[in-house]
Length: 381
Image (cartoon, rainbow, N blue to C red; front, side):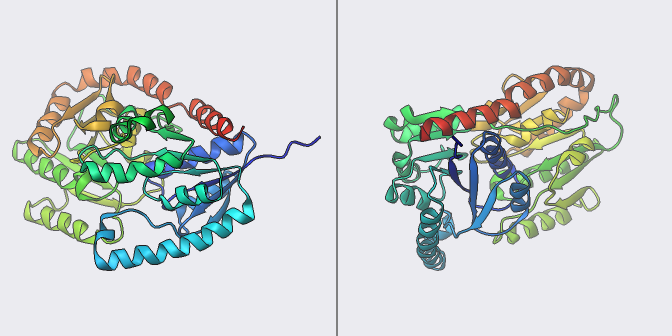
């Protein structure tokens, strides 16, 4: 008797390859490797699509209105209504055609799929990558409310789980914490035995105000004024509609006479060459972070990291001797932390070996695949 594989419909709000996108890719791999038939719904084509196909998933396109602040504006609201109507029609059609055994939604921000799963009585699993502890209680409750339709909620950190449970205590019983899988580089480049000039700082991630890229630029200006020869590489791009912030960063660089000291590299499908060419990775987020993949990537790449002492970044960097934490939105504190790392370079570099082993253990791909596959199997049994 042939065993027919379960059909899992997995839904993701973007087709890019940033932190949560890469974690989603490993969730897909987990189910494919477990023998499930995986269909992925994306709103548009993009670099993630190619990776999904290479991992053995099928890709379908369906609009998924994303909960963003722009919805509060008249134009954004009317656009969201239109996308919702399209999403209901096309999502319903997709569910009826594929008849999935479970729906796996990879974010809090596309609750339409929670509603569709309830309408068609399909078991729902929601993987939460958000943790907006500083948001107003009514906003946190609105985001968490659709989770009552899920059989299981996966949270990427204890912090994210706590934010959900803080809104509705009853949801706490349905949450399982699974740390992100973060694969390291194929080849590890050793740090420089002695730091020469310039000290190479690297920022990797979205260009947005909440990520604090401007704080990193201000810190570079402070370091140069204190006599430390340094440069900053910025790897990442803006969300559509945030082009104004990129222009603001360029104006900031000109104003502080940092031309030639700051280098923009745009979005990169692989960050490891940039990590290898860095001395210190900075994660200067000024807002809540549910976790901190970039901080972990720095350690897996054998580089010390300086991160904001905020929410999930505290959890992501806990236990690593080469990691430093500073007050968020404080360019002076970040600059001082860089100077401290530079002054104690040999000690910091010596801690990286132990940190690397710990990071590989915490964020193992094999363990992550087993955890995700097990949770999904429990929900379709």
